[in-house]
Length: 294
Ligand code: PAF
Image 1: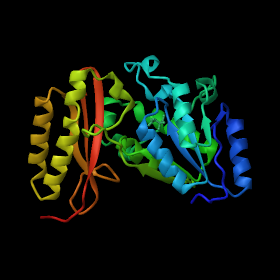
Image 2 (image 1 turned 90 degrees about the horizontal axis):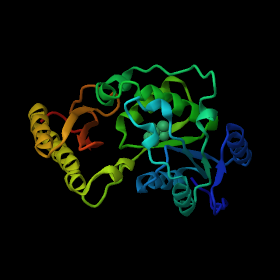
Image 3 (image 1 turned 180 degrees about the vertical axis):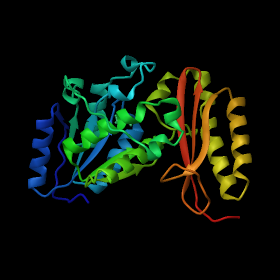
């Protein structure tokens, strides 16, 4: 917990290389102060800021990373079009009272000759995002492993909106024995239920008006499954509604919340969706309370 003896700096320090990051963390550690890391790719919205607020309740210092990681983009995904808004991001983190921003360049993260990639199984190959973005999680896991090893924070926090990513990172940290607590932060939503995302800016007004359907389908389907309705019928009905709503559906699935394998009502589970409206791909998920067979 944050001690009252810690005075937060007005402007976050901006650290551009690994030595600067490690030096700053060593300084805090020497004072027996704890550090939470919030990895991001920038284009920060209120959802990212909410992760920092949670982090501030769990560590003395909060460090955001801002790095648009090229290795998690497929050649078909436009890396150069990803929004880069460093000045606005820094202003938000300053208002939050974040202590530091680690903003390395691609050369620092992937110097010439870089040749290591983490190979994954388990939740990374559960047939959800990986079916549509087959190289994505290797890129995410590699960069997250690097960020965690560079900083060695006490805690790192990731949004639950990217639920498969969170499961992959939990597995990675367990498998590699990294002594870091991984926390998930709840998805922040607009007033009509749409999950906050850096991609929402790409929605046209009509698409924006249709987009909250995903969350409505998820929450109604979760309630129906929890109430004992047949999951296959619930999912079939949900898929139909999403298609009728003008989306191209990638998946709507009910999965175990830890392994992302087959779900059951006895264990915490999750409903996950990915669908495209126009050119924008949206993902979302909600929890299904564990209950027991009806
Ligand atoms: O969720 C994100 O923004 C990214 O996938 C992450 C975890 C920062 C890795 O680049």
